[in-house]
Image 1 (cartoon, rainbow, N blue to C red):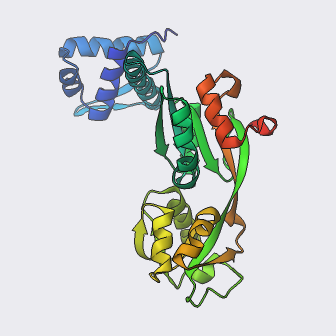
Image 2 (image 1 turned 30 degrees about the vertical axis):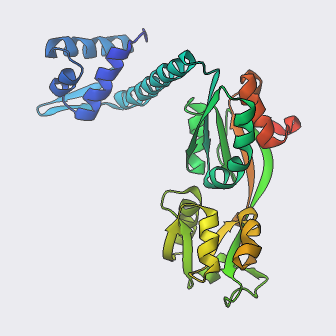
Length: 304
């Protein structure tokens, strides 16, 4: 099987798969229809498998074509990232790091660490993306990210998972709220209260949404905000109760008049891991960021 494909072929294939129409795909790639058809047939010949089903009103990918489409998109993304990285290196940049992290890391952990790191590495840029926990390991495996930061149990097969801290979620209320006097509470007991949450799409909000769905209930969300500090401000003002990381709750407790109530649910305690493909193979500036996040806990790195 000859898998030597050029980028023009891959762009044409992706466009044809998305459009379901080779004529439009050819026009988009500035190719004649016969030339585009010949390229697709050559792809199938080299693959040794049919990649499209031809139909009277267009075309659709076969199961093998779906797999080809997935990898073609990855190759094209990586080629685009290569172009962008080289362009930045041409302006004097010495390094570019892509980090995918969950809501807590983006909101609470990295803002404390990155200013000093960037000051110490003035020629390194960081592309930081907030992603759901479950998608981050695959992003690191696929090369979309150099470093991932996650919390909780998930599939990290093929990656080095470095434990660096424990994430504890707590219920936060205003001090005058009726639940403020409770020492411990189950999350299900809070669902009759007005709630303050994170914006849709945030890792924590998606996680809590699944918990509530499993309970057959709904959250009575009054407002959704973009940061834990903003959540704490609204909770302290009496808008509702909310579930936030203990670190954010403690940081805002005195200034915003908050009460912290321990959650009894097992899921409220989640171990945090930093994920890399191969820590030893990282460039020095990437290893420096790993050390800052993990406190240089080299003995706690384990392949999964």
